[in-house]
Length: 254
Image (tube, rainbow, N blue to C red; front, side):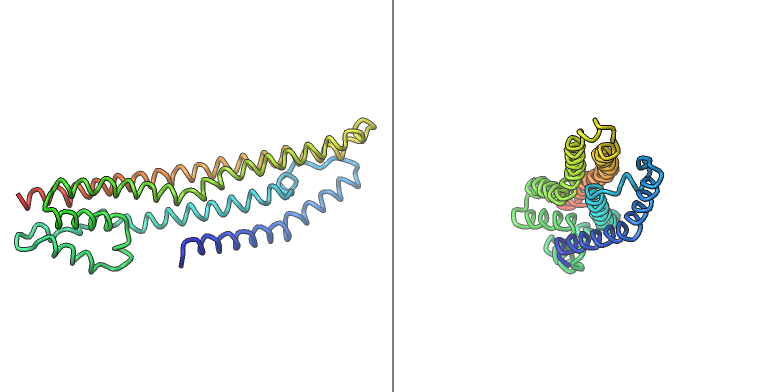
């Protein structure tokens, strides 16, 4: 399945899930709390349901869960390829009777899910450069731009997640602006002695920012782990190429 389609499906499922939670649990609980506060003449208590009841918080939770889904998906994808770093894919090079074309044929016969991994693609590119030029230096130089391209690709894959980490606090601030605007419109009632509506509007302002900042901190932590995993993968690819490809070619062809 196309990656963009999979991400879109994940977003749709997240929206449905969060909307169901709000419709079946949070909003009914808030209605009960508001009814009790109205009967007793008190302001709304500051509990979980009151803090997360507004639209801005709901949108933040949707983005938060979707961001977690994207992070976990990419971490699982990286972990699924980690075993390749413990597999010697270039053992044919040690055989004096074989040449580079035999090694390339062996790589081409690998399953498509393995051939599509960055490690195998970089190895194949370097081997083809060596097969054409016969130069170990050219084979080594082919690795660096391939690693740069891999780093750019990894950064592009994180662009949506980084946008989410930016959007969540922004939506929280929008809730703050909305709440303060409502509170200012109710200032006359507060001066007259009815501070309930103004207090409720200020609650919208502060609660939206509080929720947005809290969940953005958690999501940023996950993004940092994902970024570190990508950086570690780049290092492992370079070390693998140096150990199993360049060093082995230097020894066997000398």
